[in-house]
Image (tube, rainbow, N blue to C red):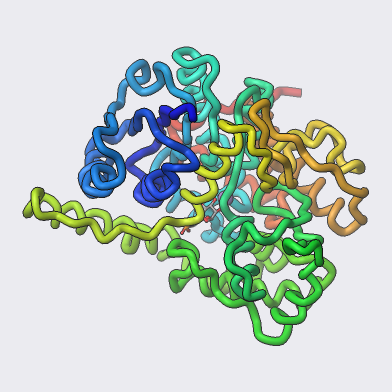
Length: 446
Ligand code: G6P
Ligand code: MN
């Protein structure tokens, strides 16, 4: 079995320990030759490396592990790039969330004007640069990208690279499937084969087949309507704030019982209700800083106090890690696992344009994802998706064309926005907050 050299880009993330755990636990299915950690923030990267070293040494005898912030060292002779960067860090996430809230608009990491447009335009050049460097030093490597906002980033990488050997993925469908499988008394999320259509963080499950071929969606719908959604059991998606999402999830199904939604649809279908529950001075970014971030720093301090005796408590892997390693194994060994991934539509959803990046089930082969096509979708879903896709495409246009007008259109068309004057005010604040992260946007003269 061929062994793999993997580079984790954005290795200083609090999600990296979970990914490393998965790589170690799945060493039979996806053996490592070398593990490379890459981050521009060396201090954070060293934190992660220090607290994980003990596990790596227990799982692999003599695995070469390096950490670097040099492109050549990071990307030479690699098989897989796991890219999970957060351009601007949590500080900029906080701006993306707080600026819209100032105007009574949804302030969310990947949704609405902050998530799609501000973060989108900021992420695009950083992700493109990583991919360019990776392809320069390892032209045959596979890039598994789940840098957010995944929908906007996927559209940008489609335009820049035709998504050649690039797979854009998100863990949210898996996190939801994990809950479903537990609620149905199944052992694991892989026991359900979902039918699903939509965009990233914007889609619907239409069927959930178990291993006997029975569609369990009707049974699950009934369970959720009667008892609510049982919180996900993975470490990441069960914290206090995520519980609110699972509570709201059951509400969506009461109003729209036909299919089971991606939880992110709450931000579009209940925008003003969600805003009422948000605190504009203390958003999710603050919770993450005072939660996961703090825990990681505390662990590092324990390590520093006694490096030779240190035992990391970070043993649980998250769906983030679980999914990305399985996806890589499927590509590396041509397993053809069926997962939800973000691909160019090309007829998979027949009544949507072919050049939209959609999230649908696909078989992951060594030559790439083979998307599964489905029947046309009905008006409600089509209308919502086309609106959201237009907002995302306009954000990518704004970046490539340095266009203020397109950025304004991207925000104004977004379902979370009540008026153009609010869109303008938000855009002007974003321009200031993003500074050098954004290209200089120009107004076209007419
Ligand atoms: C899910 C989504 C990710 C997103 C994350 C945010 O896992 O799929 O795209 O980044 O949630 O979670 P957080 O705990 O940071 O708010
Ligand atoms: Mn996601």
